[in-house]
Image (cartoon, rainbow, N blue to C red; front, side):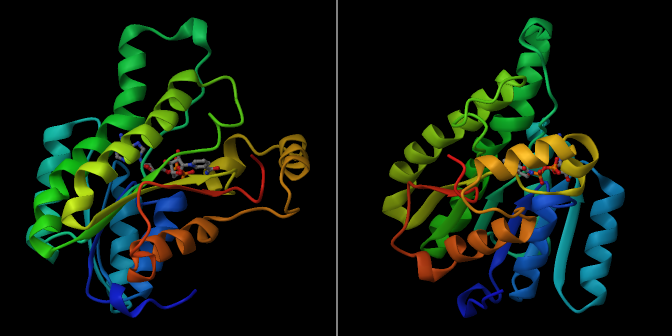
Length: 251
Ligand SMILES: NC(=O)c1ccc[n+]([C@@H]2O[C@H](COP(=O)([O-])OP(=O)(O)OC[C@H]3O[C@@H](n4cnc5c(N)ncnc54)[C@H](O)[C@@H]3O)[C@@H](O)[C@H]2O)c1
């Protein structure tokens, strides 16, 4: 991976950093010598990752919490701020792609899917705003998904959340831009994580993925982490309010 010298020493907060794409992003920023704080509901995986990176000399702090609980999220962000300093970069990564047939969705389940896939991205962005303002700038990255662009079925509240993130990014970029805070979306295609392998990536689905992509290879979490590093770095200082699609040319 490229090294971005300006990321060294930056405080980077990543949600859902214990596994999958979030874990790759945690590792990538740690390699840049950033000071990495991450939150996740999976306490065991998060504790193990933080211990491994700390043992290898990186500065990493993990908080276990459920992002659907906004006061808990705000308290977790405050704990990371106390441990590492004011936050310079936020990566809103966490989500939960549980499938849900439309006819089975209750009002409570609808709210739960919005809470796990959309709401925390707004409140985490709100929580880091004072830090970034005081620092004279910052970068916020919000994870969307090509699922809504490609018209995937089977998870309408997930895709609704992921499309809403693009609208939210455009508004926040406008609101935060005068403070030199850049807000961009990253929209992954089908990224081969362990969870995808375990749950959804059957040989048939993998062949379909290959047929849909322009590039005939699997995409991995590091492909997304590389984009996150670039967008968080000063090399991307002119870029805001945009949606960067990393899908191997699917949509
Ligand atoms: N993997 C893909 O193919 C793909 C495709 C498009 C978009 N994305 C997006 O990329 C991001 C990461 O995806 P992924 O595949 O790594 O997901 P994942 O499910 O593998 O990992 C998500 C992480 O978030 C954590 N998390 C889930 N619910 C939480 C909660 N309530 N509170 C705190 N943490 C919670 C999980 O424990 C996990 O560590 C998501 O926003 C996802 O929508 C992924």
